[in-house]
Length: 295
Length: 328
Image (cartoon, rainbow over all chains, first blue to last red; front, top):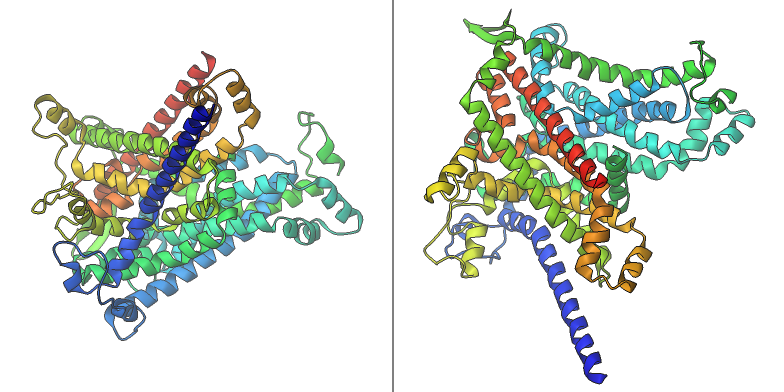
């Protein structure tokens, strides 16, 4: 008996050791690459070229970060412009998507009207299209037909419009699912009390949907912040280019300075979404799951 | 109020009640955005794909010349060996990534479903790669794959003594795997299975694994626990419980992951373009190159629609495959 229990104990300890080793492995895989990006960003060229490899910098330097925020430095000037553009573009896209997406989602969730099914499907289908399929007609239409009348090429408003059209489908989809979970009785009670439809939406439904709104806003913001292909094709100058384009350009031949500068730019571009993801981790996971499962 | 309670299939003339009008008013902005910015351009792209649409630059003045050419753009690709090579390479990227993501995703999900100290923290940290922008991810792995001894992966392998002190690997080299093995080498060069693309799969998986794992974890958590205890009573070991309960019940979510990831993987562009420019001709890169480097917008549009078609075929294939298994 004691022998058996001992064996069981050993097996339990072994399986715990196995479990914790796997967890450590997962953490190393998850954090290691980003840690290396950060280490590169605070390294001197001498440290980066050392053989054999030196894992931790003996004399860390933050000069690359300082350079990024220095408007008199050419790289810093580009970075600051890209940062401003990214905030404007991702922020405006999120606001527009939420405003129009929430209204549409509310209508699709709680009313019956002609062509409802078709509209829902159409909104969803925009999410399934490859960006590249739309980039070509966008480019031809904008450059050849719209730009001569109304300048769109290399402007932020162009990126905002394009991103909004891509992301609004997702917003409608997730919020529609969210509205469907809110009991109809609450809305009906508000209407009985003399609220209009819009008042019921803004004073009763939306406050109740706050967690869903936060999730959706975050997803929209992160998608817009991450977008690269459209930003690359439709921006040329500091007027419109966003952080992904900056990180791309700063690492390619013409502007290339050092791996450390690229890494510093990368860390800074990743910081806002990473912080948001950590803070709102629970909501994001729920939103992603809802978006995928109902999609 | 009453309108909403009416049975769904009640025959109804299109009388626009005030409620319907209100609902339509709410949907209109989103609808207009979608139609103007997505639907019309898409139709235009379809039109372009049947045209020889090229940018002609004369004396610094550029202009688009379109000329109807029927199916010529499509036939150009369908009869080109390069196109089929691109299809195979893209398929390799898609299928290999999917396999890695699913297997690792299930392992990570099972791991996070166990109870251990700090599980909440690990779950939070796991989301980091997903939040890192694609471009940053590409640049980051570019640094890790650095071909010299000071590159992180070469350094790591040397530190672990898996690589001799004088040896380094050029991870992103576009050479076929097992190039010198007699038959295998020919197969990999035909398939477009190159070393560079294989390591890019690792880099791309780093970013996408969290979402796949978290989706599968949500699926795992929805499996009723008493199924497991009942199976335990019946004497099923952990392995059997996994194959007989976990996997079948995860099937719907696996299907979702398969379809959603295939769509994204098959149109891959960013990471491959940033790390390799045009050396690995996956379909997304070829589309971009045709349109924005060669200026053949008609051909680019045609290939974009071919990508869409192939994705549909793949998604259809999965659904049938999983349906079939379900019926057995």
